[in-house]
Length: 321
Image: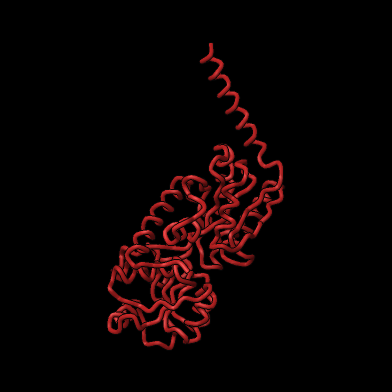
């Protein structure tokens, strides 16, 4: 009898969760963003949030909580009620780079979060100032090998994913560059475009305006395949640097204990949004390709990239700022 009552209670709870998911959402949803308005992650949150509002009729509030290397927003999301009404829009830095670079991170991906889906993915691109003699990535690596530690490469900062890709390239090829960190992608690319630093490594979105103006030229992408946004730019793998594969992605996450039916509903809606032609076009304008991969696949990707980043940080002795 006890067994029957227990089973009945479980079935009743499951039925209640299903009904809750069918009605979801019944109030506004918050998307926490670890950065100020206007950036890569914020833009993704606003595109997706607007579409969810249009489809559900509920307000979606993008709440920017910048600072603390992303710790502030991510920690707040981890501690939020697990009801699907507080979500997190984060990127490679929060779940791949931070745990690899910092000793004390106040959140844990596996313990505190469940991924809903990858929203956007953009290559990291190697560029050179157009006035340099380097025409290809091979030229750039040859110059770095000829004068180890003297050829400057700008990045958005020490310990950034861009910096890790540069160090990873050095480890794989022996081409030792001079890392020149700036406070953000925009000033780093401005420095390369202006000739202050001969080369740079940046998110495609940061490099695009300077590529389009002709002030810099792209010599390689870090992704496994060429991007449809700039299909003429080869990948590192194509020139023999096969193990260096990375990108800057944006993903949507929920606190760990959100009921599965609500997570399934969120995934289905967001995947549908990411397949819309106008949404694809908006992300492509910023150098990205829309995602939509299933949660388990996205989680595996994050764990794999974190393992790679941790190895690079240890081998290159990368220290956080």
